Image (cartoon, rainbow, N blue to C red; front, side, top):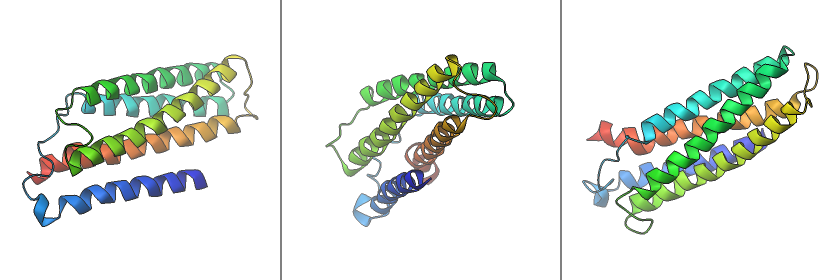
Length: 175
């Protein structure tokens, strides 16, 4: 839980940077330079939320002794997590700005990049749980590892919702 608390603080500071720069007088009218498209980010948000639902199904399944639900839920959560990373890559590739173009672009790439790194770590955790589940390592009485990875995955999802709100919805609200 301490790791999640420190990571939460990291993202809070990064998002604070966005809002701090956005309200500066010199940023008026230029921050963000253009309202970002939600063509990929909105479906990607739904993908990540859906992955969290399947991880929760897996988590609750093993608590009831349903190893099949654990394997299937983790497998689907893992596949959706990988899908999120792929879609995020294409979103990065399709941006009209680079890391060094403006304060907005720097923040966009740093914040989403840190999040992608956390998703990648979460995908590795889901992969480990999926493999171990497939091998029968967990039961109704032995599933602490499942909970640890699930809590981390849910944290990554909540952070994405804050990022999505900040970078994609806030500019639409403020315009």
